[in-house]
Length: 144
Image 1: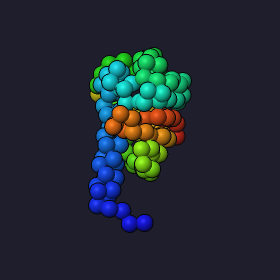
Image 2 (image 1 turned 180 degrees about the horizontal axis):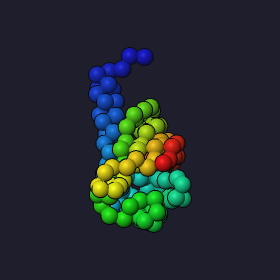
Image 3 (image 1 turned 45 degrees about the horizontal axis):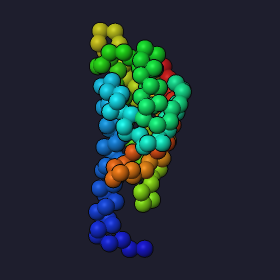
Image 4 (image 1 turned 30 degrees about the horizontal axis):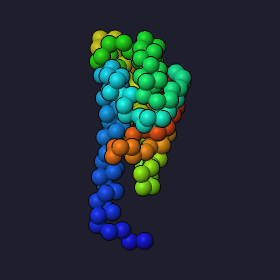
């Protein structure tokens, strides 16, 4: 099926917006901006991983705040997530994606230390004109 120019442009705009969502996720998480982070999820969005799960922005904010000192470093600038290799499949106002992540922390003598590698499996939704996470589950594939 041939797409119109308008449909092709919309697809590209959607892909760019979804890529920005992944990078905002990293930026807010590493910046310890958990309120902004939580609003990257849909109203009934879900997040789950080794630290537990939450549904809705308030529960997700509480979950991630509780990770400080265990799954996340407490001080901004002491840990960094790298997101890469995004594979996104669009279907109208919904999408699925897989994203690779790396977790790097400040080690001895301020040297970066790779702690974990993993991936996210995502279900995304366009809500109120913006792409958001509907379901995000994280898995660790390798850990130090």
